[in-house]
Length: 309
Picture 1 (tube, rainbow, N blue to C red):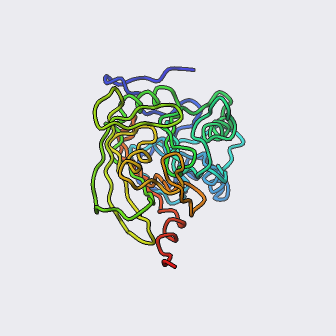
Picture 2 (picture 1 turned 30 degrees about the horizontal axis):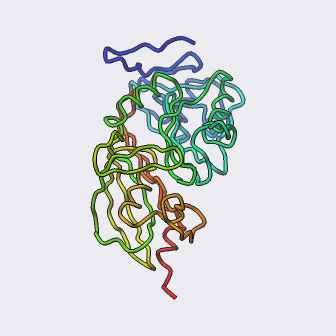
Picture 3 (picture 1 turned 180 degrees about the horizontal axis):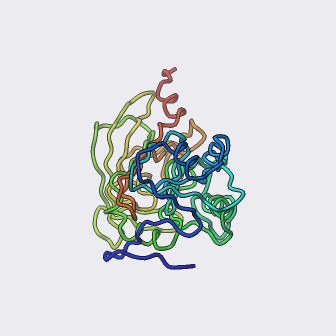
């Protein structure tokens, strides 16, 4: 595999690799019209099929809109790979993909990464199988994780260099990371912060108010609604420690619903009520601001609408 060229700052230069046919845009146009001109004899139906099967990229970003506006200086890339198929899986929704990244929404009940005990029923395995359809040597690289019972937005890298860039510069690259959760009891404050030092004890994470050698963790929360003996919160992370939100909610005396490990006996939703709904970051290669947001899970909203009996 050839190495990517690098800028002076060590980051890879965004460019099409040899597996794409590249067309340079020299004048303003729409994608459908542009491709029909460049690919002499190609039909509208064929172009639509290519867009549906996600083999057309504009400046390294997969494009599915036939009316995508093009400007001079852009590059349109057509994948040479055969048998591409649209990504479909009941536990994962593909939100974004380019030559360097994949962003997905994970459902609760699915592990983020492979473990010694579970290798196949994981987001990592599912996405590996997906990228290998294009080339058997392709694979995805883990950047961060969500707990099995937490749903929401996750990002994976498609090469090792991008993975290292993201991991080594996570706090500078990620500009906003938010969750929504329902906790037990009615919150005393409309907003607040929790800070502590967290230590991974394997079976659970312990929290200390003082630096005892653990990792510093800071969580901000805002109370959106109180109803039926529960509170709906929006949570923003300053740090991304293992089980951070779960431990900090327990510390406040309001554990996450369905989180038996950290002291909640109630489980009205049949799942842990924690969802990563927002992720914003600077693209590690292009520097572009990327923003992803999903709606609050409908079950969360329904639970907060129920009347007390």
